Image 1: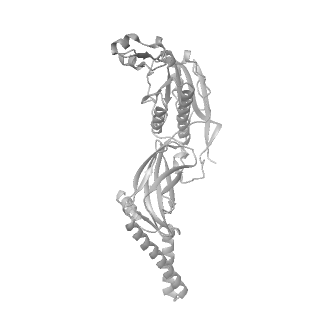
Image 2 (image 1 turned 30 degrees about the vertical axis):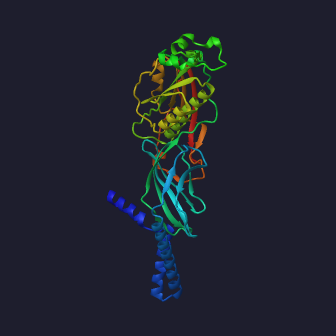
Length: 419
């Protein structure tokens, strides 16, 4: 079976005609048979005309391929690709200088896009250019969920009639990470530093003491000069008041990506997990802007991260792309936290037991099944990404969430709208 698949791929790579070209070839050969069978000169004329036209396009295409065989195509993924956003494009740089009037450069991305356990989309994106007019192929893409795409990039020569498609080189492997989107609205939870964060203690070391000193600059106050250090170093040293330890606070965030089914997911499970990822990132993003001195300890069920900058938040977003549902396993609190922020879905059926034994004040953010917010499955005019039959899997998520004994419940009820 694998041999036949490889043989089919090789045939498709070397076969120079598109579907339209194949139909034209079959039609021309059929007319040729009719011409010889009935001595019809019209049929003979049109069949010969079609065969000459196809042959001419293929020969010119092969010449152009040999002439430009050393030219390169470079994929640029400098800008992050975000789920559920329109007007996103992947840039392909082309080094070919010129093609005849009837020919174009085509670049195709196709492959599987993984959004969950045994959950794949089949994607096909394509764009074409006239190289002497534009050196960049901007391929429009759209992804309904965050995930990882394993694509193959095909560079080819095609004609404006859609008859031939001649590939330059074997396909290039392309891996695309699609990040969860951020919510535009602000978080609704108000945090009081005196009660909801734990101070990060600064350990006084000689290295840190040096960090809070600098050379004297004209204009510094005399009372800020550290005379003891100045005498030792034989130069004037000025004290810089460090931030108080109480000004930095640690927020503990726990993500619970647990599913009662250990093997596979359905469409609502994927929707809820994607919403949860966006909720976590949006929560941290808003808190970082409102409170620049806050730090975030994020635990995902397997890994933990300390977030204190936008760059680290971006790295967390890339890690969340790879986060799938997992089987529930009891865990210990990662820090001795008085308060924590827990993000969960309706497929986490152990959440009630977890809250019952938790000693911390808990803010529970939970995504459950409901009609409060309907999310369209097809949100874009680009219909080049098709889901598999996994979207029809039947599921039994919880529709309500238990409330924390000490804390607050924030709930979002969402469902897929197939229309």
